[in-house]
Length: 277
Image 1 (cartoon, one colour):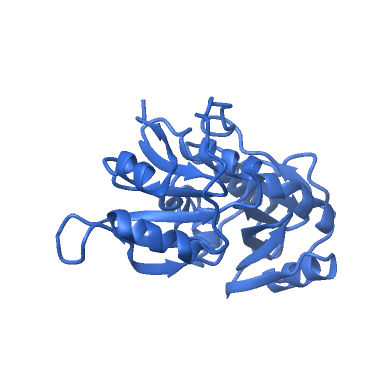
Image 2 (cartoon, helix red, strand yellow):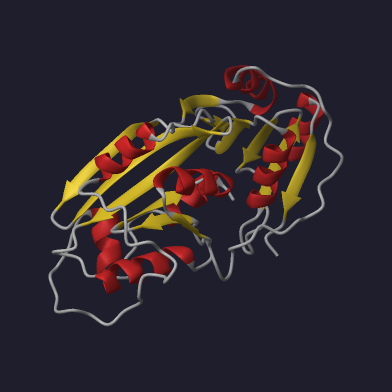
């Protein structure tokens, strides 16, 4: 899916009181509520006091995770960090809950809300915490390092269909995302560039001040298998049109779905698209 859609799925959800706590840092005390139990396969330990403790545990297990941001609230602690797993930079959203403030059923309800829906999330969980792993194939390695379990996304949007992909040229390839951005700029524009925490580049296509600019996300992939997984993830969501151009070790995810053919021609790639239906 598109990166901006993935970000929206992790924003301040108002599905439950706990989800509001997790995303926005607000919590109102209640008597023990009815809700969803923590899945039976989730081990009771290890437990942690803060999300920073989880980051330290990942480092001790050989998965250094660079903290992008962290927040401590009454009842919860959260952190976002980026680890390299199998050559892929993976962003992780860590949530830790104070058992004296947050009940097990509230944690279970939060887990359930994240695992279901159109943009269902893959989690790693144990004790009083869970991690949303932005790159699902990396979840087993993170779970193993932390003596936790993987809770796969379920329901609508949970599995990536094995859609057939076109024959993808093996070249050109790029050593740096900046070089890909340079070539995209020569084709349809790539200004207001921003490098994300995982190394992708976000930019705007079109011409500054033209009134017809739109976003693009440029990503380099360590293997063809990872590239193909990213392509299938982007074209799997009903109601979400997608237009990507790819070749070699890269993908360009275009918000302007009219630009694919030109970018493919200019950059020597092919279009992978989904009409949302």
